[in-house]
Amino acid sequence: MKRKTAKRDYSDRFERGMRVLKKMGREKLMLNQKALSPEMYEMSVGHLFGDVWGRPGLSLRDRQLVTLAANIAMGRPTGNHSHYLSSLHLGITRRQIIEVMIQVGHYTGWPTLSNAVRQFTEILEEQKVARKAKQLGRPFKSRLL
Picture 1 (cartoon, rainbow, N blue to C red):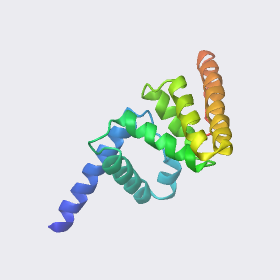
Picture 2: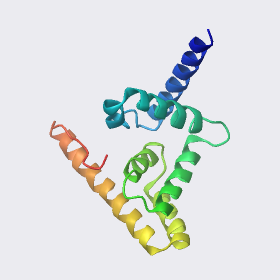
Picture 3: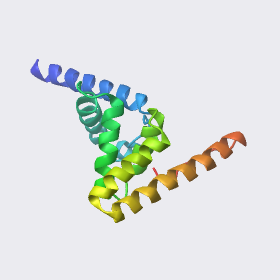
């Protein structure tokens, strides 16, 4: 009996996580994880997005700004591209993203600022290519995500 309740709880967490991902425009996130291990994918969506991102106390926009700042500060070579896209999807403007870069870069050093500029520029350039492909009726697959 207890096992059924835990499974239901887990299912609820996953559904909550998927709702958050959809709001962020990232419902196709981590599909490589899903292909490798559906259980790992369900855990990631359920816990990270259902439990953490879905918590009350901060808006989704605020959580995205905090995450973007943390990832910029850590100078991550991957993972930031999807957060730039989520930021734009949630209505965070290009100018506001640049302000986050400036603020974080001055606390963490120029190399982190340079890395952030490179990654955000890659996203902006790829978005232009995606729009052009859409206009021409051609498929587009991101090389960054």
